[in-house]
Length: 460
Image (cartoon, rainbow, N blue to C red):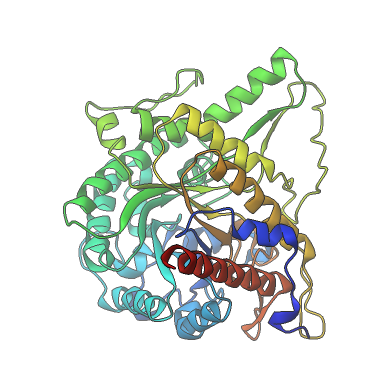
């Protein structure tokens, strides 16, 4: 097996180390339901993903997050593993039902203590803690009252946000309200792929508004306790490419982009929904809602995996897939990340940006104690180069979090897809860093050496 020092960096890798401003961090991410397990331990209440994953036919092989990566019991050694990989930042999510089992009322001291200790250990290991309040796991007790279709849930979320900001906000670097509200609304309420599993377009549109409203209410409630953490939201986004230069393809690309990206960006940063969509179902927007939704944010998190491909013809023109597709069937298109960010710079007054997720699922195999995943290394290289282009173009980018730190429960795909830098053997819970993890460590350490050298030069 190779040692860390044998994962030599290329010249282009070393160039990446010099492409970002001092203070830019390289880290990795994970989410509560995908890694924690211990689904009923220490007072945790059920979430909609517990219900959904235990419903026959909803996930691959009926797999659930009951055990996942057993991170709730193994968090100390997992943080030690992150340190061994030289990660500078770790983005995690908080399980609402672990800290407040019913989504309102009494708080669970054991659940709160878990995150309190996790943050402290990250800091002890010199790893920046970045937290997200909601990564799709609504307490089932709130779903029983209507879930995100019920406007009151937005107020319960603001209460939850204030409590977490009070308890952890002094030690977190960033605290985000939502992760990918598009997925909560569209995949969970229109397409039925994710919890709670509804198929109702009008419902999904109203849910999207209540999610944004909850974000605005939470921003106000968190600011009321003056946390040190930067406050923001994390949106999944893609650049949009027309398949041809035809008017139909160009118009379709604009429409897809408006629905996927602008429906969330415009309310937050411009205080309005985009007019171009012309959707059949428009949400009920009450007086004052847009002012709340457009509360100033300290940072914007962006999750990027692939581009939107727009072909209006029948059959549609396929994407060229010059760099291939990953194990999810998603096209690898690194230049889309830079295109997206530079386009944002032209259309919005942007706060600082964190890339909170970017990663590749591969059909990884553990062979003789190691996992060879060169495609993942190339994927990260390409996206960091695209990110560097945006940085050089004037976008203020503060960090990059690879998705994910370890293989985990991949929602409706169960355990079939592996995104991690670290391989997890689920029957034994053995963690094995992949070649990409070793390469990533080398890249981080080279960046740190360069930064130290530059500081010495400045002070000399």
